[in-house]
Length: 416
Ligand SMILES: NC(=O)C1=CN([C@@H]2O[C@H](COP(=O)(O)OP(=O)(O)OC[C@H]3O[C@@H](n4cnc5c(N)ncnc54)[C@H](O)[C@@H]3O)[C@@H](O)[C@H]2O)C=CC1
Ligand SMILES: O=C(CO)COP(=O)(O)O
Image (cartoon, rainbow, N blue to C red):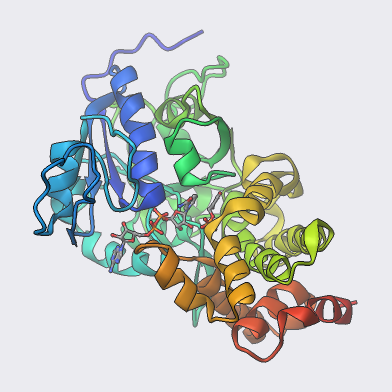
């Protein structure tokens, strides 16, 4: 039985980030906020890290473009295209690019975090005290938050810093393909607090009423979001945020969404495959062919699952890696056409540092695998577990210049 409740308020969505994937997700979400006008406000704010951009001479909107650079936000809002990070993709007109982070998140009840992982700590600092207390988050970030205190998922880090519940979206999603509306799948992990699902779920299972009080996040999400801060219930005048409504925010005919509760598994698949994609690029750059690539992918997925079970406990499910888009499917697409793979391959082919290739090839986009390889290594070293993850360790050693890509078979064999 579907809910008949009428809600006086709608969810307002802000996308925090506007790179290649950030802009693509803004497009997906903005299409859905128009389609589901009973749940979401149509306008989608997209926070943009402001920069001055030259409009490409051949841009269809600017046949007589001046040579003067312009603010990226003004370009996006006037031509409805992110000419720097997602060129040639028309954006829905209900996306509003905003260079002011605090203004962009004002009154937003759903915050979608989508930016390179190295910037998130600063963003969270800037957001503290400026978001509505009952906001909910989704992290599309593929990376891990490693600090002296250990290794956290970005959904956890965001949740702790901002005192909100945050889930994760990750999948086999090369951004440009999604933006071009070529079919793909993704996984959304959202273990909503019971108080957010006050009404019968789409399957008809009634859930408990909101208690109208603050509840410790620790109780609410299977240990994934254990934290000191309290979670503020979603007021009853908003539509509930259960799996059904979360799906309506992201699912498109060309972008199929599967919802699960394993936030850690979904986040780890996205973060750790970037290290594996570097290894795949290294062996590909040597001209070693598909068998070599398949071998590092096989070891890579095993290390992903092992890392999850070892450091994130029993809430991490093996099937998240083997059955969902965020696991093996993302590994396959990333090791075929991802930026980490392509840059690592070119680095080996040309005998150059991967950072040089990144700078030359990506026009301001950012590789996540190199920093993740360093961060994961520093965590593993501290835990005394480097040897138990021979592929992750080999990638780090190669980036450091202590080993050569040719040594990958021996390095994997040394792991037993
Ligand atoms: N591009 C892709 O195909 C996919 C990317 N992802 C993940 O999504 C996340 C975001 O990636 P993309 O949107 O592709 O980013 P990107 O690689 O396009 O990075 C560029 C973005 O970083 C911003 N930036 C630069 N300096 C900054 C600063 N100091 N502070 C804040 N922002 C700054 C730029 O303004 C731009 O928006 C990453 O974790 C990535 O792994 C996930 C799926 C697909
Ligand atoms: O995550 C991705 C595809 O799912 C994109 O990977 P790259 O960052 O290596 O391009």
